[in-house]
Amino acid sequence: MMKLTVIFLATIVLLSTVVKGDDLDAVPKENVGLENCNCIATFEYLPLCASNGVTYSNPSMLQCAKRCLRINDLTKVRDGRC
Image (tube, rainbow, N blue to C red; front, side):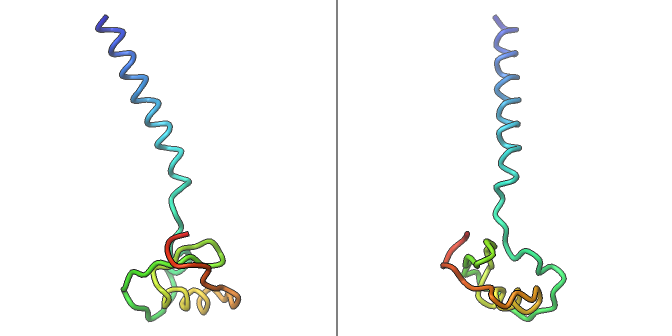
């Protein structure tokens, strides 16, 4: 009986690890591509979803992305995360 319990628990742990690993692709993109940009932006957190499917932390980061990434038609789609 004890051996069966250990096998059952090990199976549950293994399955939960596999399912959790699949969630890594679902991590939302935020401020993508701005790591090497030299922009002046505020630190306020007012997330917005842009037309490229990326969440920017605030409007000034969206403007930074337009300049740095040279995406002139980049626009705000809605307030909040994508």
